Length: 328
Image (cartoon, rainbow, N blue to C red; front, side, top):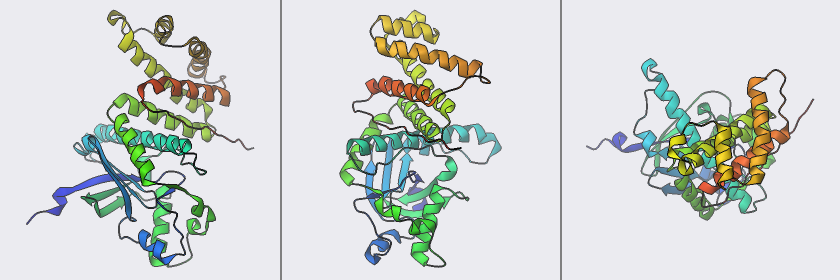
């Protein structure tokens, strides 16, 4: 007898911060619609993708399930003391994939002109679930305990299934009817882009840090937003220098790298001038943390330059937005 468990692939699942529907907008009060959400493990899967580096599925209510093949082949023993370092690295790489995918989703929804775009946001491991699938059929699900974006959505699905007790806040929130609707064709385009990104660890990391910078900016943590985006700028510049600079000059400081790239036309004078100003701010933030202040405009400018620099490594445009609010 064949053991089905040996053929089950585990997917890491997550919801974006502002949810979306796939194909159509559902109505909590429509019984036919609710049947699509009442699957025993996850709602009905509406989209699948099988690429060389990963497999993915998306449910009708926007649960994204991601199976990164190289990471699935070396899952560490979570909780085992001797595997702690490997577990941290494993999750860090998986979250880079999740963050990179999100910024591609945001970019695509902006490009499509959707009224309610899907915005990228930083996600932690406790905001994910694990879904085991045989082929494309869900077999099991496990998630962390605690209150977060994922647990709230699953609580809503449980209420829809059981109708026990008062409805959850999400059911009562009429904004749920206005989530963006992503069509299968758009998802196919997004995951084809992610297939390109997933081939290179550098591009995954760059997009992940931009998502982290975006989340920090939107919660008003401009210092962290600046430093995350600056990491991308410095990393891309060193990558460009490794590709185009003299082989005997590896390990130069960033200012020397910038000078070379400017002199040989790999950086425009406009970007070079902006980087020079922002480097001074970066030095203040790291060497004079007690007195240095990072303004929203500093973080915004750093993010814009990072986006321009990484654009040369993608055969498609990247569009993102930054918004923030301060209250007293």
